[in-house]
Length: 306
Image (cartoon, rainbow, N blue to C red):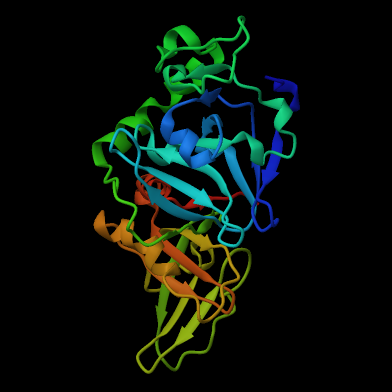
């Protein structure tokens, strides 16, 4: 593997989805199992295994499709919603924490040749492998095959893996509707939601850095902003984190907010939604942010950075 070639970018055929791998993969598999032969339409599948938080979406939002696997545990495939090209998969063992990126979707796939050939017991007989390549009839022992750096990265994943394995609910049938994967951005700072009398003028302190929303009803004037702008004498709920649902979204698009709030609702995490012309902002208790991020990733959503 050409470690010096990373970070590296890739995408789908039509260009609607672009992504970046922040580092070299943990390992690259050439999988010769019958399932990979069928899904790829070829002799084997070439997958780069990498932590999901090292896969950054640069453009577009993939659809997540549930498919069966030989183990019965299922996989979730990220596809372009337009050209339908498969970009990566999440398997049940590590769920949303690890992505199996299709090497052929990299702009320069030559940088990630296979480190090991697996399930060669069902390899096509007309495909000879060089004598010096690493190959195993089925799967392998990671401790024996992975480089030290990759083993250290896996060790760092173990707490999150334990959380996933304790709480996962993974569909095994392909008859579910595609899940909407939403890109989320955490906004800097702590937020507050202030309540003023319904006839009050918008105060001068309602402004400054960060997201701001002002709403007036017959019962109140509500201001959502960075909490350092809210006077201590003002009635307010404080210590909220703010997640932006990265748009823009068309007004007739459905299921966007539901896809995000559903996993949080099941986990009894209270939320507050503010909608704007182009998108939505979700506020949740700062104390629940770490748990919420894990649940949202588990549901297939992606956190992006500025």
